[in-house]
Image 1 (spheres, rainbow, N blue to C red):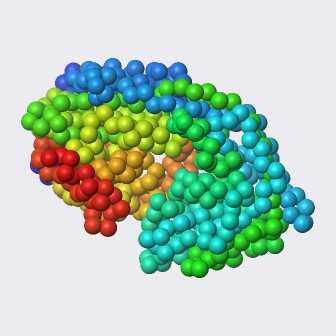
Image 2: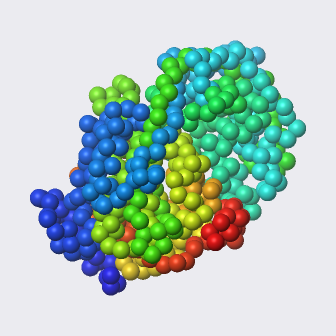
Image 3: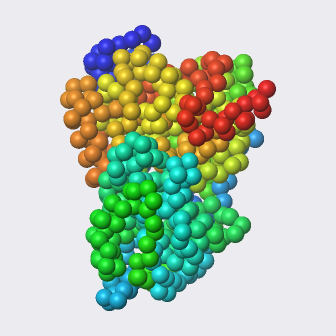
Length: 554
C-alpha cells in the first residue's frame, strides 16, 4: 500500500463506508481502500453478534451457543481449521455465582449504624463457591491502597494483622493520586492499581471482607458501570478449592458512602486518602464493623473459547496470534425496558475484526501460522484468556506476538493511533511502520492512569511472556480535530459503555473502522511474513519470562 495523505484516505473510506450500506458486493476487492477488506461484511458481523437475538452473549447461555456457532461457521468459510487439535473450541470450566439475596451492608460504630443499599450505595458479592455467606460485625481496617510491592518499597499491610477483618481500600495506586513520577509510575497505573490485584492481595493477607472505594476518575468508569457489571451471574474458573482462599465477601462502596463510613469512624476521608499516598503510611483500625449476608445460586458449566488456525507456508510451527473476547454481560433485569447488554462496541467490533482478518489473510500465503483466539468470560475477569494461557493449544514460546482487538473506535478516521502500554515492546515499531503507511502517528494512551493495559485479554498472554500489541484508533479526527474526538469518546464511556445502549447507532463512523482494520492487517502481514522475534522493553516486568523461554524455540 502506498502512503496516502490522511484526507485522501478519509474521502476514499467515506465513499466506501457509504457504499457498504447497500447490497453486498460480490467482489470485496472492489471496495477500493482496504483492498479486500469488506466494511459491509464487517458491519454485518457486528450487527449479528450484537443483536438482541444473541442476548448480550453471556457465557453459558443460549447467546453463547449462537455466538460460538456463528464464529465457527465464519472461520470455516475463511479457510481456517480448528486450532485445538483440529477442534474449533476449547472448553473453559466455569462456575456462575448469582446473588439471589444480598442484605444491606451494615456499618456499626459508637455513633450508631449505617445501612448501605445494594446497587445504589454498595455492590457486594462472594467469589467463594458456596450457597451462602454471612459476616457478622467484622472489624474494619483502612489499608490505604492495599498494596504490597517490594520493588517500589511499599507495603500497606506492614505491621497490621487483618485476619478475620474487613479491609477498606482505595482504587488505583499512590502515583496516580499524587502525579509524582517517582512514586510507582506516576499517573500511569501499575498492576497494583487494579481492583483484581487488590482483592487477591486482601485474600492473601487473610481478610474476611474486602471493600473498594469507588471514585470515577481513579477507577476509570462511573458508578453505573460498577452497579451494572457486578449484578447477575458472576463467573469464575472452576477451581479445585472452590475459591475458599478468597475473602468471604468483596465489594465496592460509592464515594459518598465511603465518606459516611469514615465519618462514623471519626476519620476524614479526604485526609485519610492523602495520608495513604505517603511512604510510611500505617494502616488504621477504624473502630467500625461490617455485617453482610449473601445467598447464591450456583451453576457449573463449560463455556467455550473459539480457536481457529491458518497454517503458515514456510514456518508453520511459528505463530502470530490474534485475540478478542466474544462475551458481554447478557441480559440483566435492571428495571429498564431494555435489559439486553448488546456489547456492540465491546466487543462485537473486535470479534468481527478477527473474522475479517481471517478472511482476507486466508486468501494469501503467509510464512507463519496465524492463530485466532476468541475467548469467553473477559467481562468476568479475563477468564477465557487466563485458561488459554494456562492451557495453550500451541507453544506460547513459539508465538512471535499477539495482537489484541477490544472495543474498536467508532468516532471516525483519525490522524493518530493510540498505543496502550506505550513503549512496552518492539511490537510498537510494527505499529509505527503500519501507521506511517497511512500517514498516521502513534501516541501514548491519553489516560494511562486507568490501567487499560491490565484490563483486556492480552494481559494474560503478556504474563506468559508473549509480546503483545493493544492499539486503537486515536482521537484526532481528520475533519473535526482532537477536541471533537475526545468528546465523542467521553460521550460513549459516559452513556454507552457497559450499558444496554451499547448498540450500533447512526453515530457510528465505519470509515474510521475500515481504516483501523487496514492498520491491523498491515501489522499482521509484517509479523506473519518475517522471521523476527519481537522483544519486551528493558523495563518490562515480562521481559525475563520471555527470555527464559527463548531456548525452547531452538
